Length: 87
Image 1 (tube, rainbow, N blue to C red):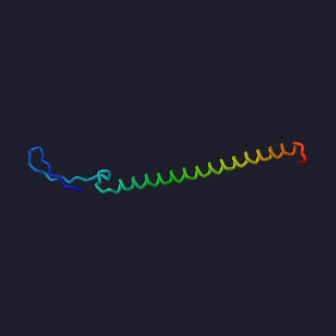
Image 2 (tube, helix red, strand yellow):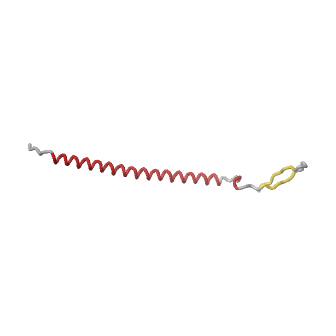
Image 3 (cartoon, rainbow, N blue to C red):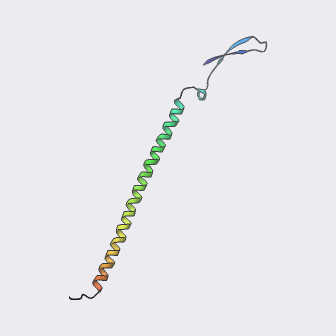
């Protein structure tokens, strides 16, 4: 609570008691809380993106391995179909 010096209608000084609301507080606590909340959200977002990229990369590797395996099988079938020549 703060005291403020004002004047009344007649011009004589009057001391008034002024109460502060929580939003008017001068402590940096709300700013620190907001900052830490945003930092926590940012770290969570980065961690989630990192996991999503890792999962996507693993799926890409599986698809690439499957495609290579299919190509190898196709080449083996072609190799078996060609007549063997003796040298």
